[in-house]
Amino acid sequence: MRRSLILALVVLIGASCEPEKGWQVTLRGKVGFPQSGEIKFEKLGNNADAESQPQIIELNKDYSFEQKVRIEEPGYYRLNFYGMQFVDFILNKSDIEINVDGNAPNGFVEIKGSPDMDLVSKVQALMNEAQSNPQMADINVKFNEARMANDFATMEALQEEYMELYEQGTDKVATLLREQGPSVAVINLLSSANLVDRDKHFDLYLHVADMLKKEWPDYAVAKEFIAIVEKMKVLAVGQPAPEIALPNPEGTVVPLSSLRGKYVLVDFWAKWCGPCRKENPNVVQMYHKYNDQGFEVFGVSLDRNKQDWLQAIQEDGLVWTHVSDLKYFESQAAADYNITAIPFSILLDPNGVIIAKNLRGSGLQKKLAEIFDKG
Image (cartoon, rainbow, N blue to C red; front, side):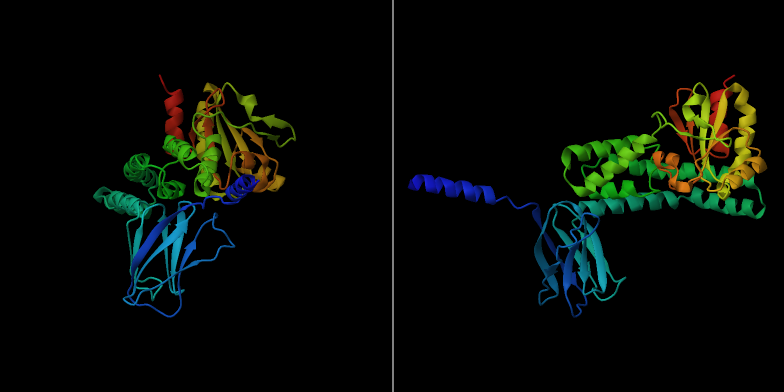
């Protein structure tokens, strides 16, 4: 009887005592000019627990601090020095040293021991190196001269040359990021809108997402990035374009798939969109040049007003297929294609597979010439 009671207690205790989540890391550093108040360690980001209280960091008499903190997953954290200086950083399993002034929002700050923060610094150095290229400076001078002379052809050529040089830097960044293991810094850098070309380096996004699925499956910061990549897959080069089936100006529903067998430019635009209207003459020229060889345009308007839509079609001489549900960015097509800004376009092959994105100006001209001017 007594043995049974002991076993029952063991089972009960074992069932109620779960291992504590996470791990401990040490924060250490020094405050140059301590103020009255508290130093708080806080969690940042969408995965921060709104009910959790910040941990107070104790300052020693020599103005140093060294304290263990518990974190449940890699992520973004902050040290709040007296409500006067805020230092954001990435924390994982490495101890970290943070030295600050502590008395001003833009005061001195030094972060040591964080591989993630070191990686961010390396990427910044690579981009600074690319942008300080003497060729870049020369292009900028020539571009300003062309702009003063209203020489738009030269401006466009110089812009392309500039982007080619810029991409040499971003290509180095992509190579560096591919070499990293699971990392909040990698997630942060790849989530930045203009760091690397997401279409050109989509394989990198897939690589990182697959790695996170295997090694960080339960971390919120990883789940958020994986969700982004899943959305990107929808419009990745090499993927079949999602179907669009909306009314044309006469009210007849026209599916995008009805144009299979042709190269199709799916063009999201609107009357109110200045850059869209500026690009329209180029698309008109390309349409008339290559339509009889199998080139089509499928215009998807994000206008709200039918009269505006029809007026812009007539004014710009847009003689191709047009559809719209006149629901602005609430359009079903905009939702399916994750459209947050226009102009936006994709080029499809005769099987409806995406072969290029956001081709404008000479970019569209070159791609169509590559397809149709083979002889």
